[in-house]
Image (cartoon, rainbow, N blue to C red; front, side, top):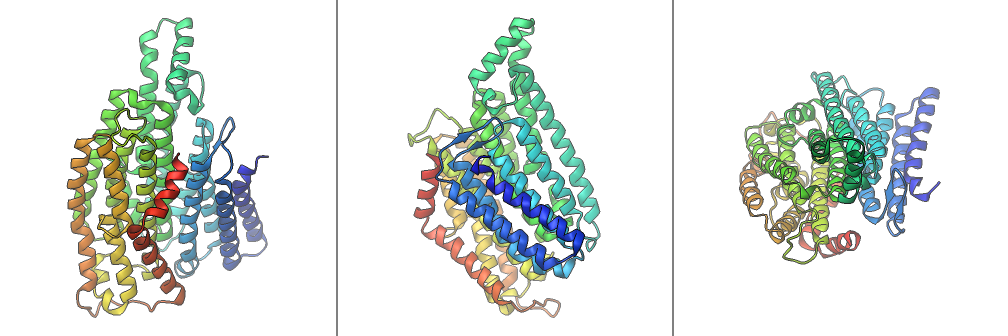
Length: 485
């Protein structure tokens, strides 16, 4: 077995050990530490594998970019894992199975990232999606939790059906389920095979574009892009907070990476219809996400709708994949910009969920009133995170948006840039509103628990990360540049 399978083997072994321990004797602390050690071990192994040479197999491809992205996924899960124990101890009973499902999500996500075959991609996607169904409906402490689980199950099934339909159309033209068959050469070879056996020449030329549109639509459900966004707020609000964090960060991270890789393999930029659809969805997501967030008073719904706009911004990168026009003369800069913005947003979002888990069951923005006067460190940390989401200078979010806009300008995508700027200005309102609420005078109805030492340490790590990379992005950018080349 290749050493590249070692991280997956570590996660799978930990899952089996926890299941055996549950059958013998339940222990929340044992499951917590065992899952954490497995995640840390898998992450360290992935970091070690970054410098290895590219290794291609029928189902998976292992290279430095995939190893780095898998490491980032595991690091984000580890950050969230650090808050799981105290949250679950307060809001749930039998907690051991939760960690099994978390490890299953991690296994599905890193497998998706390394897939180069539709079979491995789809199995990994379903492993992650079915694990999320259990995580969303895990606890009975919330009134609408089962509704959220059923909604996600139905919509996940719809997304899977669309992806399967797209895979079938691509297989009909190419005769292969490998991502390599999506290239222009693979499509021409597949079309030649069809032409020799039948007279449907014209039909064969549109099978791959139709399949690409079906797959893009299916993944749009996972990324909650317009018009497949209607589920996101109800599920974000209905699921337990740790599950919402995993769903907003890990599921979308892995799904977008797969979508980007499909565009990279598939030469889909040669089809004007696909580019028009992507551009339209990007613009609609940017504007709609921010306009819907303007109307919300609940934190989860604000984060849910703002995530629509952020992934709308990221769709600009898909329009630049293998783009012929590049004023910088460096095509790999697009990959660097994509990784920088994606990681900047997800690091900021991870920090936001960590602070929210520290605050407990605060669902309304009004419940943050006076936070600065009782917990100045948490208020400062959350304020910095909101500024990063808004893209204010000296934060990692600003640098991510700077990279994205620079890449779009280099590709001469003027209309998407204009809508990105308009949407960003709209988004300033609800991010700044949350900050202002925390500085209002405290009311008798608001109270906050004292911070533990680990929570203070977490808040300082978040502040240093957000401002450190935002102020001195060179080291982070050089690392991404070396990986993307």
